[in-house]
Length: 289
Image (cartoon, one colour):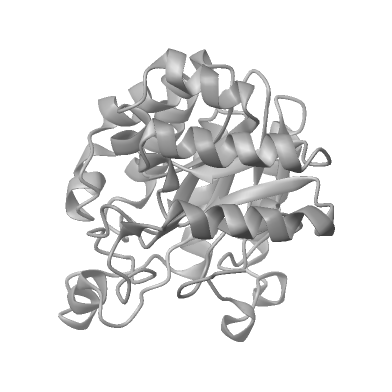
């Protein structure tokens, strides 16, 4: 396989064949992220990608994930070539996944997204981070709440599964609960199939790290993050969906099938908050990106 740099994929794609289609992130200006700082965004030569697909035939994977950070930004002819090659030469593949954000999703019409679905695109992962307008501006996300909602609804209209990624702690202590409630409100409007919860990690050489060093940004406490998660779930009204916090960055792992397990998990989180038992939370050494 022709891999350039470090590849990142969602936890649910741990058993997927990783095909790198783009290098880096097309935006790469979020204040908290350093994942693609060493990579200048570009499309990989289509011949290289097709060679990787050819190599992948013998592995007999059931799922493929197209890397990197915002691979959906690739032009339609490029995407169609890649997905057509997977569909034609890898009959064992049941689903193709990809990262997308409003910049890439809203560049594609519903009809184009449906075409990609026909070629095997089964899920789009969108890092919305927050549904709070003030927080989106503070972290230089480069999109508005309304653009976030529009992107999610377009994916849903195309019939592709939509997985929203949200960040605990990204609003700091000052807007922690406002962020939780606003994020739940955005998710309620989109009705994602999946919600993946991560916890902010303040990484060196990022603008967020500089703010923390200047004492202008403070992460919520460990139990403050549990309170944020509880508030988000309390305000979340998914008709059907799955929320998980199994990513390595989180202090506490939960799995909630909506609407059936919502009150059960709220009860669990309430008990954790009342106990203040540090042993119930993951240690710092166990966390990672």
